[in-house]
Each structure stands twice: as C-alpha cells, then as structure tokens.
Image (tube, rainbow, N blue to C red):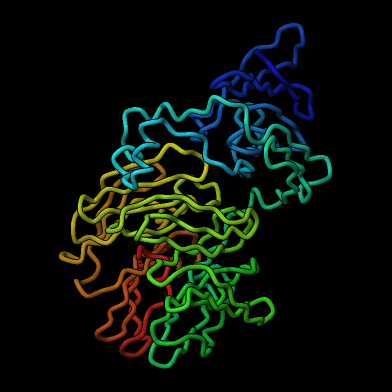
Length: 445
C-alpha cells in the first residue's frame, strides 16, 4: 500500500513509496487528477540495493530524495520525471543485517567463503525489519540535507556533489584529472613526481625502506597526498597537499595490507587495512567512523573498487587459485562472485569505459595480454601489451575519464602506455633501478 508520496514541481508527476516487504517506488502521471496512471516502477533489485522498502520520497528542484531504510537515502535526478536516474546515495545504516543462520555459523568458524560467495540461500539475506534511514529533509539546501536513522539518529550530509563526476585520484598530485608519472625510491625515501599540468618535477623525501606507499586524496582537495604505511609500527604518515601538514595515524598491525579508498563517498580517501590472518577489513571512515568487515581468505589478493558507481569503494578479493572475484558492494549485503582469470594472472583495478564503475580486468604476464569486460554493455576484449616482468599500472593519464593500458618495466624503468583517447602509444623512461611506480599502489596487494 502507498505510505507516502510527493509530486514534482510541475505537479504533473507523483512519486509514491509503497511500504511493505520488498516494496517499490512508483511514478504516476497525475496531470489529469481524475485519471492518474502508472508510468514507472523502481525496485530495490533494479537499483541493486538490499533494503526492505522505500519509506519517504521528497522532491526539491530536479532532485528526488528517497529514504530507503537499510539502503540509506537514494538521490535521483528527475530532469526526465518519468525515468529518475540515481546520482548518489548516503547509507546511514551501520550494522550489517543478520545473515542466514548457516552463513552465520560458517562465519563464526572463520570459513566464510563457501556460503558468503555463492550460496543458494543468499535470498534469505533480504531484510525483514524496518531499520535504517526512514526520513530525509532536503529543505535547508543541498549542503545540509537532514537524514533520520531509526538507530543512529540524525545525520547532516552534503548532497551538492551528487551529480559531479568523481575526480581521478590515482597518483594525481596536481589535481588536473590526470595521473602523473611518479615513483617512490625506497633506498632514499624520495618521491619523484612529474606533474602532468606543467611537466615540472618535484622531489619530496617521505618514507623509509620497508614502507608501503599509499597515496590518495586524504584531505579532499582533489589532489593526491604523499602517504606511506609503515608495517613495523602500524602507523600511516601523510603530507597533505592542501596545507603541507604532516599528520600521522596509528591504524594497523605488522602484516596488514593497506587498502585506502573512499568508503563513505565524502570525497576523501579513508585509511584502511586488510588483515590476512583473519580476513577482516578495518576501515577508518572519515565521516562514518570505524567499520569492521570479514571478507576474504588469507591467500586472496584484495583491493577496493567501485562496481556500482555510487562513489563508495566496494570490498574486493580475487582468488588466484580459481580466478574468482568476490565483491561485497557498499549498497548490498548480497555478494557478487565472478570467475574471470586464472592462476598466474594479475587482477586489476581500472575503469576502461569511463562509466565511473570498475571493470573486471586482468593482465596475463605469460602472454602480455590484457583481458577485460566493460561494466557498461558487458563487451569483452583482449589486447596484447607488455611482457612478463612488467608491472601493470592502468590509470587515466590523458584525462578523458578512462583508464589507459599502461605498464612499468623495472629492468629499464620505462613507462609504456596506450592512450584511450586516441590509441596513441607513449614510451617514456622515468625512474631509477629499484623505484616503485606510484600508480601501482591501488592495484591488488
């Protein structure tokens, strides 16, 4: 049954939230109030979210805000009022809703994978309670949207960036939207960066032998910050591009794998580690606090990617023994598992089609072939580029919003790249023996 509804600003279209288990959002044409008719139905399944039902829709301008319980607030562009396009979301719901008893038993036994990635009972994960975000009030402007959560209380969020394309922050130290040629020199602790905006070179001493490089946009200014994780102490050290400050954060243990990314969609890279000994991700979200999530086995290679395009990093584990990708999406507790690759391959973090969603992609060192499946359209492709020793470093070097195929060859410190904008091949020597290419830091570890 209809619980609440709101019209667009013309009064010709009505958005109705039907509140019941697996409820939906409906779009009605009410231009003739005596004869309204249904024009569209939006379900949790079509949005790829896992929540019991929508609760309250509210329209402000050309934006439709919908409080959708466990999926938080969903934000739609209604320039086309009949076909709302989701442009953002903010999830206030902190606890994971209860998994099936069998899944819980296996998690408790520290063997989560057989059930959590491929169980035929995953449908049981559909929430049955009315928990999470139940109200949204965008009446104070886009920068101060109020969200009411039944458990966590009041949230004040900035939704003004919902329609912006996320900026490339893969080793983009000058904020021009292009990945820079950049290396870390473990022998001296120097970072050497050639800025793509003006080709000037900078050198910064920041790090020690044994440190793991973790560049990212930790201060949210659109530029990558120099950062390292020191396994021996579990401390992260930063040089912030916005003000030059040099903070340190103690977060992690020796043996942890750093997996920094933007997990809460606030435009800032979050400090995070994955612990192979127990398969737990520890994420220090800059807006939502610390999150813990078991996801992965000790032999997996892990990284963060955005397979939904919602601006939040998803947890990804790739299993070299069987070539299966295990993905826990930010908007759903139902995992994705996908077989793509084989033993010896290198799984990749990349967006080759520029749709703001990560693509399934691998590099096969034995043949130098790149294989990928585009997230838009599902087209697959293979491209030979590289040799066995190469380090794959796909990123957006030409600023067209798409990852370019690229490798770094340690034997001669040469960067080889195929531009996605014009298919031109670039060959450039940059670095010294023993250098680590900075763009490799976002690839599976």
